[in-house]
Image 1 (cartoon, rainbow, N blue to C red):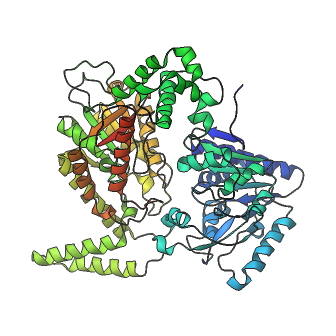
Image 2 (image 1 turned 120 degrees about the horizontal axis):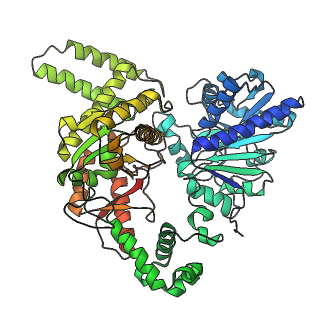
Image 3 (image 1 turned 90 degrees about the horizontal axis):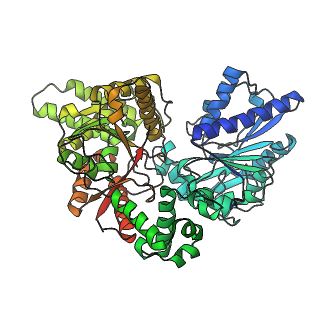
Length: 632
C-alpha cells in the first residue's frame, strides 16, 4: 500500500507536451459533451507561457479534427493595469494570438478583464465581470498556472480565500518573472486586475498546469498546509481539482523525491545513493559517519534489512560519489579505471559542445571546456542560436558608432555605416515595447554575440574552424516566443554531427530555461541522434552524450555522474571567459527572476556543488561542474 502525501491529485507527464495533450483532451471532451446536450461550455482560461502548448493543441484539434468552439463562453483570469487592449503585452493580445483568432469561438462569448477600465469605476466593472460569470452558469472548467510564489491568477500571497475580482498590486518577484514580455522591469505594470480566489474556487472543475522550475511551489501547494501565503494551497479545499505537471515540476513531491516514505521501493544503486545522500545532508553528517540509528530515524530501516549494516551501505555510496569525481572529462589516457565516468581507450577524443545561446558553453561548463582543450582533445563548439534578442538596443548604437569611428580613423568612406547608424537610432528611439527589430538590427545584434563567442573560443585556445554558428531557424522570430522544432533545424544538426563524428557530445539538459530555447535545442539534438542511430551510422556506437545544466539551476547531487573539480585559478579563468560576453553583463533583457549576473550564478552554483561533495565527506574543491550521461 503506497501512502500519498498529496492533498490534491497530481498527474505527472514526462514533458509539457504530453501534459498539454492530456489537458486539451479533457477540455475537448467537455466541449463535445456539452454540445451533445445543447448546452454552452464555460471555460476559465489562463495566460503566460505555461498554457501556450495547451492552446496550440486546442487549435490543432479545431483545424484537424473539427473541434468546434461555437458553444464555448470564455472568461480570462486577469490583465495588467493600466494597459491598452491592443498592446502586444496585453493578455487580450495574447489570447487572440494563441487561441481566439484561430478557432470559431463567437467574439461576443469572449470575456477578458480590461486594462483600460477607468480607475474610479474599477469596482463596478469587477462586479459586472463576476455577474457575467454567474449569468453564464459559472465556470465549468478553470485552467490555471502557478507562480513561483504560489500565486494563481494574480492573487499574490496573502490574498483572502474570500477575494473576488479586483485590482491588485503585483509583487516584485511576479513583475521580474514577467519582465521578459516588456523592455525592462520598469515597464512592467505594478497593478493588475484578477479574478479572486473565491471566483476561482466556484469553478466546477480546475486543472492547474505546471512545468519546469515550479517543483518547489508545486510540492508546497499540494503537500503543505493550507495557507493564504501560498494561494495555490487553497485549492486543497476544492472538490475537483487536478494538478497536471511534467517530471521536473514533480521532482520535489514526496513520492518522487523520497519514495521510500510512501511505501515499498526497489533499492537500485541509484535509489540507494539518493536516499543516503539525502539522509547525509539532513543529518549534516558525512556519508561514512551515518549509523544504523540514522537509517531507522530517517525511515530507511527497510534498506538496512535488505542490504545489511549501515557501514557497508555507506561505503557503497561513498565509492559512487568518489568515482563520479574526475579531472579527466575525456577519460584518463593510458589508464584502466573501471568506474571512471568516461572511457580511457579513445584518445584523443573529438568533442562537440552544443551551446543553445552564444555563452552557455562558458557559463555552464567553462572549466570542463578549457580542460578538454588543455588535455589535447579536439574540441568543437556549435552555437545553436544567434541569441540576438538578448542584446540591448544600446549595444547596437554603441557598436555602430564604433564602426563609423573606425572607418573615419582609417580613412575609409563612412557614409554607408553612418546612414545605417542614423536609421538604427531613429528606429530605436521610436521603438514600441516588444516591437520586433528590423532585420538589419537583428543581424547586428547576432553579429555582436558571434564576435563575443569567437573571442571566448580564442581565449580557450580553439581555432576558427572549430567554431560553428548554426543559427537554427526555429529561433529567428525576433520575439521571445519561438517556433517549434522544425525539419530544417534537425537537418542542420545531423549534417554537423555526420561531418564531425564525435566521441563526446555535451549539450544543455537544462529544461528550466524560462524561455524554452534550451528545451527546443535539446529536442533537436535528441531527434538528430535518433535518426542517425536508426540509419545505422557506425560512429554513433562510440559517441557518448553528457548533459550539463544552464544558468538557471544545477543537477541534484544524487544524479551527478561526472563532476569536474576546479581550482581557484580555474574559477577565475572561467570568470574572465564569461566577462568576454559584455553584451550579457550587468542588466540583460531576459534574466528571469534572478537578478544576479551570469558569472555570479555560475560561480555560486559550482561552489555549492563542491561544498555538497565536501559535506558528504569527499575532497574539498573550490568549485565543480556537473554532468549526467544521456543514453540513447
